[in-house]
Amino acid sequence: MKKDIHPQYREVVFQDTSSDFKFITRSTMTSNETITMEDGNTYPVIKVEVSSASHPFYTGKNLFVDTAGRIEKFQKRYKK
Image (tube, rainbow, N blue to C red; front, side, top):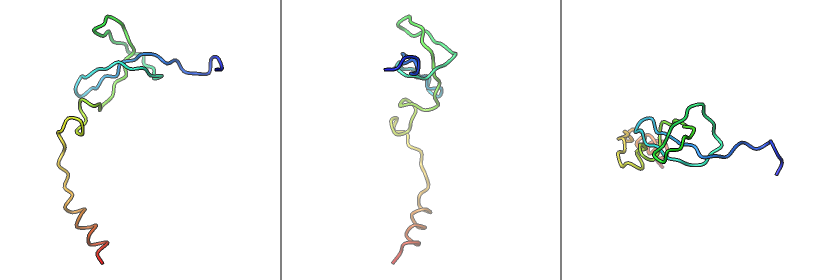
């Protein structure tokens, strides 16, 4: 492996801003902000808007989307 061409791969914290859910993983992303976790260590923090704690697919809180108009439009367009 060549030296000084690869980004630093380290532990970082991803924080979901909508649910305040945090998890530690390894990443090459960088941040100027840091956070101290329950284990007493300080990690760089990357803030994200959606994670498994707030995504409707994982939480079961699906948003109702009006598809009736789209289905009718599709059937009308491709009706034989």
